[in-house]
Length: 110
Length: 115
Image (cartoon, rainbow over all chains, first blue to last red; front, side, top):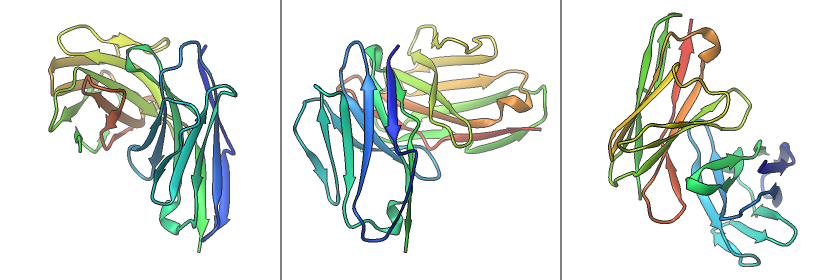
């Protein structure tokens, strides 16, 4: 059964710190891995990763995929209080189904 | 960017009643829509996959007679929670896929509270 495991489950840091969120997976037929940010409502899309070793970057956020070791990381530099959210990692299965990890609850304290 | 709406955003109902939730893709045609449920402090769990013009595919453990899904057009899917009970209280989220690429776009969610 396909599985997505995120760590840590919860993380509290101070504003300005850099954080690294982890997502490891087991899947029979890999297509893509996605990162989402969820605040109070539904998730918003951050990144989609398909190829190994190619960093995707958006402002202070970046992500990379390692298909050999079966994991991805999401980095956030110079964190701000607005980065506080749940970060979700998901795998795409056949027919576009998403399998989500448990999420990492990130809290940025001023 | 692609926009998905849900209606209502919040609903409170009495036990035993049925509740319909709409999911619309506003600026694209969604060949496939997905319905998720999220309990407090838990991740999203896929309930069913809805394809326009055909029957929905339900995940294991999801009762198809309780959670009725209708995908009548390329821009609208509905989820009806029939004979709702307090344990059905949850955050229901839909997502839509346009048919090109793997990105899914999520609606804002519907918070259902059954008294």
